Every structure is written in structure tokens, then in C-alpha cells.
Image 1 (cartoon, rainbow, N blue to C red):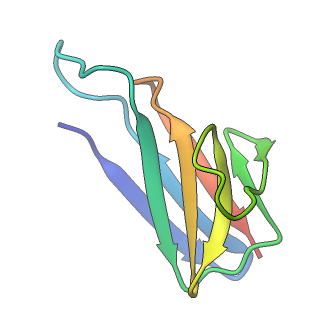
Image 2: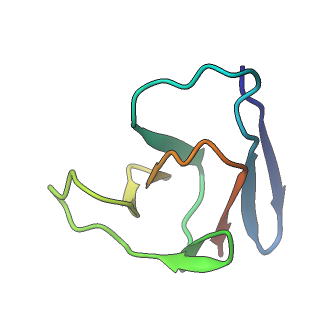
Length: 87
């Protein structure tokens, strides 16, 4: 089980992802977050700026704007993480 919390304010959107509960861990994977209605100037993961992906780039961590939403992809480290899209 895993908890996700989202907050939105005038400066952006913040998503907090908790570490998984319990001892089981799936195989290595990416976390993919979709932030509706966001048009950020930058996206941060734990305070570090995340690269903006180019169309067709399906590998690695980063973010892209698609049809009124922001898609954020990052490696799942199975630890708490905070993603912030700044307007």
C-alpha cells in the first residue's frame, strides 16, 4: 500500500508520495504522475529540477506537457518523494 497526497496553491502543485508500507517491493519501475490543469515553468523532485522531456522520449526521468496536463516520470526508489510543479 502507498499514499499519495496532492496540494495546489497559487504557486503550483505539490504531490507527496509516501514510501510503500510493508516488506514487499515490486520489480524496478517508474512512477508516472499526471497533474491535471497544470502548466508549469519547471518541475522539482525533492528540490532538484527535473528535465523537460522532448516528444517521443520514453526513457528516463522527466516531465512533459500533454493536452492540458503535466506528466511526470521518475524512477521509483521506494522512498518518500515530493514532486512540485511550479507555475
